[in-house]
View (spheres, rainbow, N blue to C red):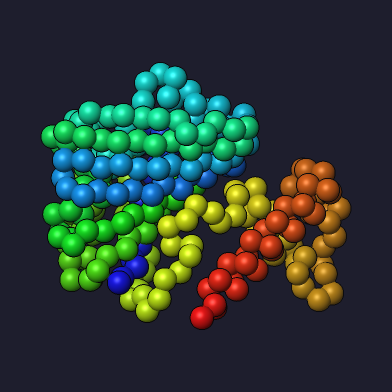
Length: 240
């Protein structure tokens, strides 16, 4: 099995749905896609963020179900069914099914042309980027998929290759929703940048709280949660 990934970067104004992520720092979307043939596809999106910024995403659905799949700017021609599976204060879970597809420039649908044995996809939206992670049986036609996606990108979208790795065992984080929340990543990055993890420490929790403009207790909690998640991921990664 092969694990390969690439990133699509969006300029402001290029995609209405991605504009919300560009404007709202706390938002993070993890979506798993499955596509059995060119006529149908389903996805499960796990969206997290601050309550007020999640409401900005809700507004897209209030105005009609947004086309979150196409990378060309040309709307998908299909029957779309959407179900909200969870609507909590800091989390949304949405199931989407496309059937009777006549035309759709979605990455999973483009891949069906090149991978007859099937592929599974995970997409992570955060800020101006959508990172695609793909699991496939072989890597023979990876280049064809990259070329196909690149050729269809709408104006304001750009493509970059990340990695291609042959897997010798299953890793639990490949498809499962998880990872650090946006606010945890921001806090952790700021702590590293200012020397919080150096010996001796070059910054205090109070100073980090002032830098981030949040209470000291919030900084402490985010760092504890972030380091706990990273530690668990490290152990899972090295487990036999």
